[in-house]
Amino acid sequence: MKFNRRDFLKLSAPALVVATTATQTQAKQKPAQGSENAYASFIQSHPEWKSTSAIDQQRTVYYSRLNNTNQAYLDYTGASLQADSQVSKHADLLKKTPMGNPHSINVPSLNSTKLV
Image (cartoon, rainbow, N blue to C red):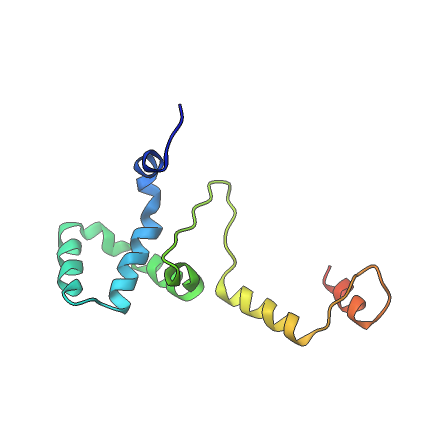
């Protein structure tokens, strides 16, 4: 059976908590006019969603690019995105340390070899 995107979303709805909590987090951070009331009404109708606040916080702190681009990342094979802190540390390393082909013999290459 072939599924289109809409069918996939219907079947995957329980796994889309991350996307929904991102929307809630964004509403908390930059509330549109009247959104506080809408969020409060939603939580009153669905109190179980309040329990996702720890996930909302982790997403905001460690994976802000998902919120910034209004995206969700779901991988059923166990892979994950790099946390913002990992990306920053790696970018700092690349900015500060010359890296070269680890098969060569020079200082930039030796820097790479140490990390491989």
